[in-house]
Image (cartoon, rainbow, N blue to C red; front, side, top):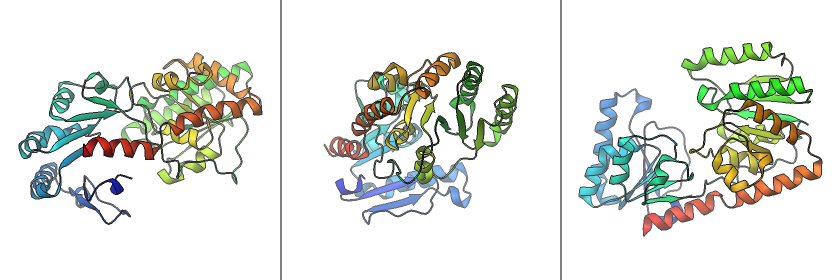
Length: 320
């Protein structure tokens, strides 16, 4: 989406793969797919930053402050403008240094660590509404709940299971699907979640599925009524908007989402299983017309955070 706004874009990535991009975009891999060492990555990175120096005026670094810390002094010496996108609730003195080296910093959350700096610009999330939209030919399963994220403690699927256990005791009718593949270090954690499902007598109501390719996310969203996101405030997960754009009712712990949506039915207290259970019970009891009203609210939020709006603002700032 940035390509139409610029004469040429050079993309440096850690690992190259299969891609289809406009003719004015060149991709340079640091060599992870070839098994290069970390030292080789760094060597290749500096080689590209220097050899291409006459072919770029500005640098855009996405969610990797390490690149700014490594090459920031060089880019400053060469007179390049440095723009860093960093959207995360945590940060250290290294983040502070990366901000100092940057011309501007972008994030989507007012709770992001980088939101405190004067040079930071709050941006739209950037949901691709051409890719994510309701699929009319796919029927949504009634009273269905979706968790869709990497299976790890930081995503808090355990909190969701405890909430579902409370709903089971309340006699609320539902089914829940948990989509996500754990990293090797979180396989035992995922197995413990499955054990907890049995302990809570949720067999037959809760199902686990492996992660799926990004472009197939719309299919999963389109088969569920409610999407639950338990991510911490400060990151403003784009998946909230992808689910909403696909026609799901979104229930989130994010304070950023609560601040924008302004509907207490659609937010719950972080890491509070009881509050989550109460909110889910309320949403599952909505009439079809009430559901339509909620979805219209999130549609308005999606329109204020679409990808075209984001890329237009990014291009305008980077080119100025």
